[in-house]
Length: 223
Image (cartoon, rainbow, N blue to C red; front, side, top):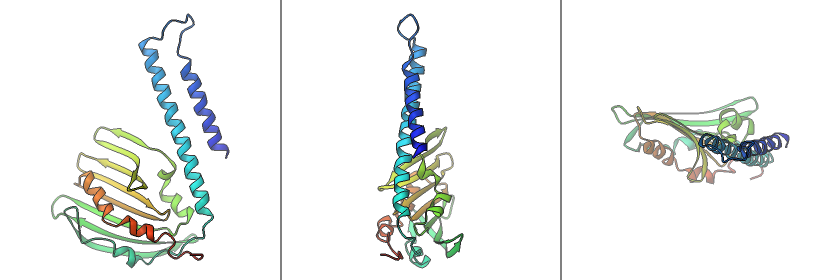
């Protein structure tokens, strides 16, 4: 796989350059030079971690590609996983659909939640049927490692209850979203305003990720 190999070479080059922090006269590096060295080493470690993560994800996609696509579960089954009350929020309208395009079919169910005041949220459960193209279109974060902070905002890829996840949250206003990929086919997403991060996580947990895991091979021809 040429791309990961090239990135590995780049990481090695960064490490080599970072090691060249001393002056010609052999004197000890200044504090500024040491700071630059530590920064370069930190960047090199981030590159190496990203390379490893990409290699793991490519191997996972390769393994997934060897499986037959599954017929997505009925959206009514997904809709039944949406609780009436979660994290102090009551469920409002629900929606569901099963639609096909570009050679794959997606089943989806969603519900709106509110506390009757300032907090609102939407929880969506999607079954991509394990089709790689569908997954890649909306889940580019599964191929990356992200960790950013900007004032009150955070953005990072994490592990949530053992599953890969992507979190965006701004504590100023409680705006955010949490996406979780389950069994390489189901995507659970909670978005909202006026929430705490704990509420956002509870909205995702309420769906029952283990139930979705149990449907890993549901609708698959060779299951």
